[in-house]
Image (cartoon, rainbow, N blue to C red; front, side, top):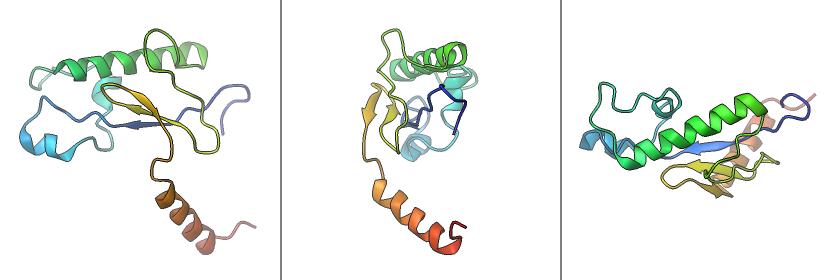
Amino acid sequence: RGQPGVGVYRYLFAQPLESSGALVRALGAWHGVELASVFQTFGRGMATPTENELAVERAVLGYWTRFAATGDPNGGSDARWAPYATGEPLLRIAAPSREERGWRNAECDYVDSVVQVMSPVP
């Protein structure tokens, strides 16, 4: 839930650290890896960032800044980020970013069913 009248936006950060060593690249994108984009730290203490990493960094800066200023992350030449509506869609942030639907819905539905059994709604 959020502030009335302000959209909620769902994303999947999918940009791996291409400029890192083979082991880190093999991990793909993991929880927290987007923070290098959010805080604009690509290239600080790391290898020279790739053009894809820099493009994602610019896009994330735009999305987060516009959202903080207006409540809407959309604008500029970045891919449109649709508001969250009953789980769909989400923005897959990578080079290039795109809208995605149905991402792991079966897995999420299973977890929801288990949680309901373990802690039924009063």
